[in-house]
Image 1: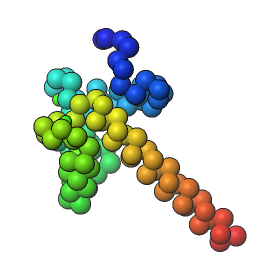
Image 2: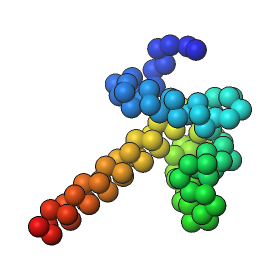
Image 3: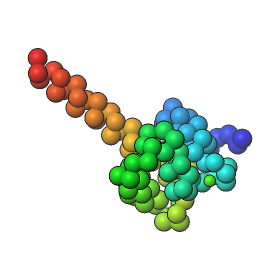
Length: 103
Ligand SMILES: [Ca+2]
Ligand SMILES: [Ca+2]
């Protein structure tokens, strides 16, 4: 494995997590995540056979496929991970806020 990849070096921690996930999703190990690989991974984890989840995944995939080659390279994948984590954090904050307001 080559070290010193310049992709998101400033966010090393995020990058390391993303790399592990990336390698997990990249089933044929060609260094790119195809939409099919992403869907296969999502079906195994979060959304088992949910159609709405597939649509959402497609929209997300298209959004982050910056060069529109139908594949996510690691840099594109990192951006996607960042956004997903950001959304989850916001959701969590929102829930906490609502919870506090009830008291
Ligand atoms: Ca692949
Ligand atoms: Ca791409």
